Amino acid sequence: MKSCVEACLACYTACLDCATESIKMSDEAMLNCIQTCLDCAELCNLCARFCATDSDYSAKICAMCAELCDACAAECEKHDHEHCQECARACRECAEECAVMA
Image (tube, rainbow, N blue to C red; front, side, top):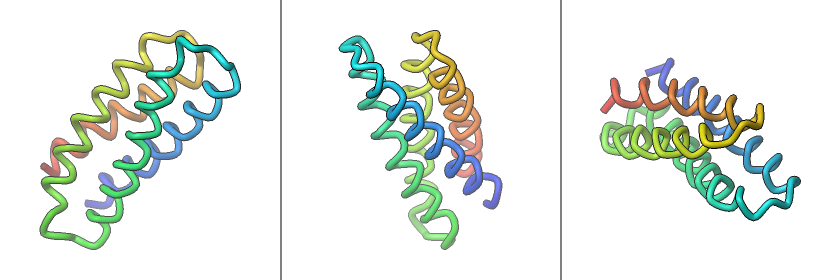
């Protein structure tokens, strides 16, 4: 449980950083990346909270989180920016941890 919480929080931070850096670029090509990162950050934060309290619903949230993390990683991997690549790595790790919990 602890490793899932830690992975979710690391992914949350990486996604917010990626979205923030992408917004600063003011590049229309980054809009989908920004939205996906913001969505992923919010779900990772929620997933971490559900896992930390050992909620009966954490497995369902983890399954959804794994799916969104994979989608976010795929989007970020399309871009060569370092913040996108870091986000993709955090998302892949979180997806693996959440899949185990689901």
